[in-house]
Length: 376
Image 1 (cartoon, rainbow, N blue to C red):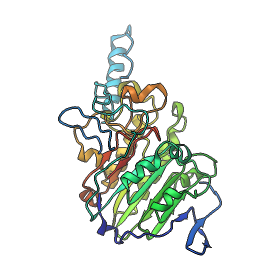
Image 2: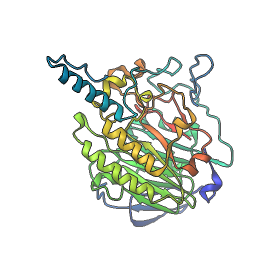
Image 3: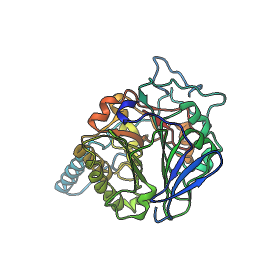
């Protein structure tokens, strides 16, 4: 939660303003005037571990062993090289694999009945992030049920897969200011930030990243004292085919975040990287094999954090947590097995981190998406 006064504006209620880029159209009706910024598609709580196991339903490979060498010298050299490589990254597996603890729910659908979440203090702003996999799909599985219970002041949703700003009665009733990042590829990616307070500036895409898809992957909104960078980060791809693209993304991202050093910055959303082996299941089997958990990606992410002096808010507030994930893939019965990844988070600048009072994963809210929502 953030203190509302730091946003520099009060929360207002009005009909929603949906934006995609730079050309403004004004539509009027007898009862309301709605401003919609449109462009061509140019590119584009919480289950904290209790003292005894308790499920919240209302609310909410190590590297292969070296082969024997006939030459002792070659064997020793190979082993030394392996050990050196493993030690280069703090993200490398520590030797013990983890899964979600027993208290984490294993439900495959959003809980039945009403959802209830504690409300933040009046002087705080609640931000929620969620990779919804698809607006159309998640809408049928309980998207609004969660949002009505959570009532975030700012909502960052990724992988929306919409082709134009949607006319959505539920979202319209909650958010007066809507900004949709849409790419040129239909039904692909997508990012949106919905807010009850009007920002003073909006920027689509990631400057310096030479890929048209960035307009569907990042939106930066500014308030007088706070910057929110909503993100659906690029993925290194199957067999790491697009790893070089991910590295270019990180380089551009670092420069982008450094532009806002004078303000409190919250970079949040689906970051598509895990840089701590406590934050994914079977880490030893995935190291340098699975997109999102390679030495190149982990080290690049850590460099961004070091350069910007930003911190993972969830990890700061949960320093000893193991196996609390935000993503359980649909395939492989991952949810039931407790096999997941924590690839969604809030990354905060020093000033913003001082004002974040809570950061939680909504462990019970599974079903509308294969990701879980988080809130600050």
